[in-house]
Length: 200
Length: 249
Ligand SMILES: [Zn+2]
Ligand SMILES: [Zn+2]
Image (cartoon, each protein chain N blue to C red):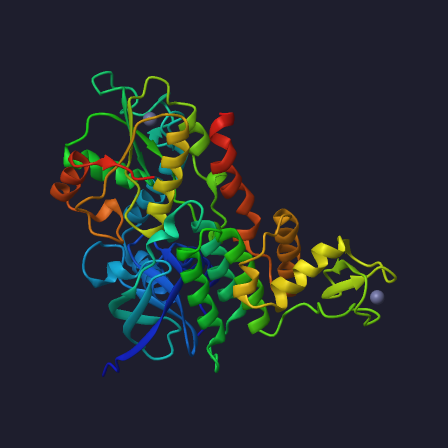
């Protein structure tokens, strides 16, 4: 039997999602076909709406609603304005927020340096980071403990050191080779509390 | 279904983290290159956390049917080079790993590419002049794959004298009479000969003043004869930024 065109299209689109192979795509497509129409429509609507109404915060590059001019963290005067925590992904920011250990501001890089993947400093939000250091007393480098995350932290530490910005690194106590997103809250909270000066 | 576990050693030359937490790794060993997936490999702790870029590991895996990706079940760390994430080392480690990836195939009888990558990474970890180490090993890796440029004679007329051009498409040095390619000083042509044919040990004693030129030759040669390397396109943004950008901001 040949699949109808609409089904082939759906399988192809699902198969383009990260981590979804051809078999999973087929399974998902058939699953969706068997769901009530209103459920499928509300999923489609949620996807379209998220794409339409979410964008990056112009200050910290985290996610915000496009109705706002800045994200809820940047907009919160209660937060310590002199502390800046640099993370790779919005998910890492959420993980640190869950730990409840941190009250300062954030900066989301949207990745880590990986020259072989074509990701250099210009592909990350490093220039905007360097332009928001006025009034910052300490930059906490909370990139992941992978080789790529360490390299990004070292690179930033050197830049920030040249600009005479006090720079610290979390990760002491965090298992090596992982993303912050997956660290448990207690470990993450401790890693932030025990941050240290980077040896350059 | 019975699972047939196997064990293989190698260096992780590429690592892609998928949003669902899986990690796809490319591993280069003595017998060639292969790809594996570690389910939820991003979760720190446990031995899958050792599946890090440039790590030398022993991996236990199994293959299900025709699937191209081996399923990684255990990772044992044999060695990690501590300096590879330093700003003056990291971009060069990427160049060697990306080049080894481009040059190697699934079945590699001799294992020379693996050997040169391993000693290149060790060299980067130890030597002060990491830029020179990277240039030396990049040409060595290329030569191991049988793709070295012709540097003993002019690629066109075969003379050994007055070599003062590098002809990218022609695949090697050119002479003053043939005049094809990128013009060089005779000293620079001799440096190319040393980089391509000399031993790593003697190459590392060189001063090599015109490095931007040598990177340009390597970059263009590989782009033509192997494939364009992303890490080479990026190189100046990474190395120059940390040398100069901070003072300009
Ligand atoms: Zn913000
Ligand atoms: Zn000639």
